[in-house]
Image (tube, rainbow, N blue to C red; front, side, top):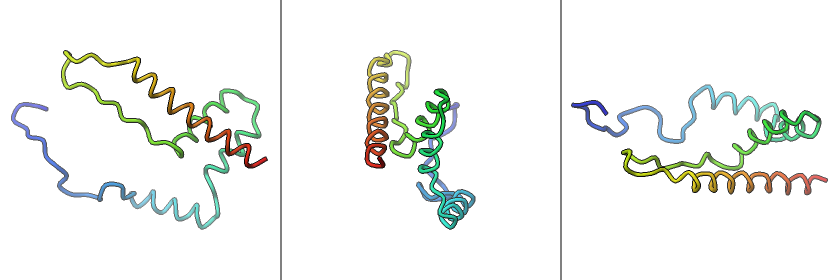
Length: 109
């Protein structure tokens, strides 16, 4: 923060978690068309042999299963960042996401 400024709370706008109008309209349209983004991603994943594309699809699909983990960043340089812990958290979330996807594939077969 710059000198002379104070941290303020929310003073207006949408309530937390409320999608903007365009996002809401797009979700309504996709629902009206019976279009399932996760299902289409699974279809693409199964239909391609391109490993990079498969990785990107898995990466995108995890956003439907897990929120982005929040990492606390120290306010000053005296607190070291625990990189090992951050990597362990990331690996744990990634493994859980892959397990969920694998379980869904087994159920669909």
